Image 1: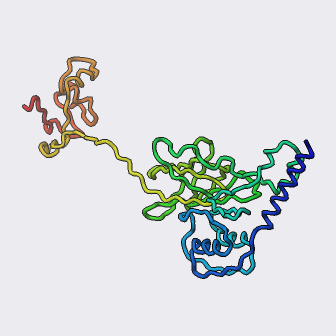
Image 2: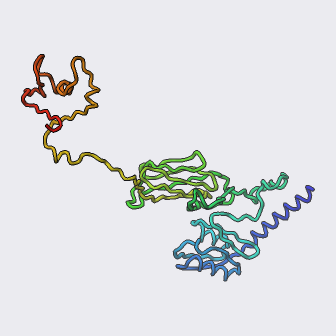
Length: 318
């Protein structure tokens, strides 16, 4: 059985070597052309068929010149600064993928025999174990999906840094002390005074939510392929309350121009403690601040130092 396994390994290495050696070299010159036009020109020169989505291609013209250069070198220059990866097959086709890498070999963990895992460079392990979300819906609302970074061959890291700025959508000013929370986990961070943030996330999909008083709450599905940047432009959130009606005797100050008026309710008079005699309006008034008795055995009372003849008592408006 070991001999058969060794033969498979040799055939696999031979297949990989043939694929590398069969890559064509091309001479190409283009000026102020779109990437789609360059891809069509490469198809004409090499006879390879290219599969891609036009909406993935970055806009704007590009220029370049190559003389007897490997096809992979040309594609690295065309898409090295974008989120697109490419796969060149010896069967004569080229596939452009968004963020992810196409692998034509199995990872080392697939094999249990140690003979097949000696050369790990030929069988790189995938860095993104779960790059795509299971559901596009959360809490009944559609969540925008954002892909961060570009997967690279041979990259062993499983944690990547996400950074960016949070600004006010109307004014462009930074929003400090805003919380960014990774749902279904205990991770999170807050923005600094300049609105910047940085958080480390594992490879794969995460739901990122913003929370701040007076700022709208936004959820985004972030798929981490590598280090990258994500900016937020958020609007102010206005909380609308129910109508509050304040009722009062609003015409009292207009109808009654007399100041210093104190009204007694019968229920209040009954609650005032009294030592001797019966409760009457004069004895009740003396318990108020600023009012004192005119003296023992004397009738009347004094209000804030006034005399007894400066007071008016109305009983039932009489």
